[in-house]
Image (cartoon, one colour):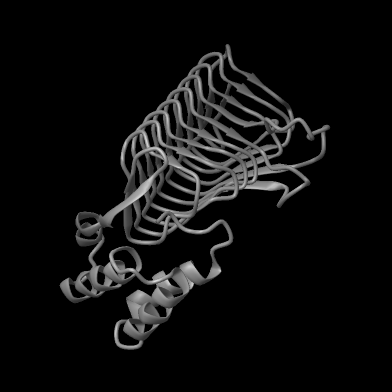
Length: 264
């Protein structure tokens, strides 16, 4: 099918529900399946054999590669057909065999993916997870349900994240990490269970953090992880550092708000 007015190119072998909506310059590859209640924004490309089920709304300039499964029912035994959603932002790359499920009524009712994310092959993003912006998930990384991932995070290959965990901004998880508690912003973790291995200095440098900011974060890290202080005592010290170094307040706020406890 070729809609000359909107330049929507749909391969004749694709199966597209009549209720699906397309922006301009959308391409749908051979044998792809686009289900009901799907909205796909401008300049998106849906690869061969990919499936997109609704209700799902996809923004502009996304590339979804072959055999990805987007917007399918949540893998939750409590799910019984409720009207839940998946929302995907702009300029995301979603590689082969990625699975992203819709939300559940037991939580937010929606799974959300932000902008400019690089989601590599075989990644799984479960129901009610929230993925922010500029994130890299390497091959096989998996989020259980209700996971919150802040911006500029990198999860190494085959990293596993437990339900209800939070992954703080600009943190890094080495390949094969098993994350069972919250990972504070700016921290590197590795292992099973995941343990802290310092500040993500290289990632911060690439993201434009200043040398003084990195030094302040290292100082705060030593208070939390290298001193003999209890966590609440360490948090008070970190808050003192944050008075002169605002970047550290992001670390302090995250620790204070953690409900699962932080990796330590």
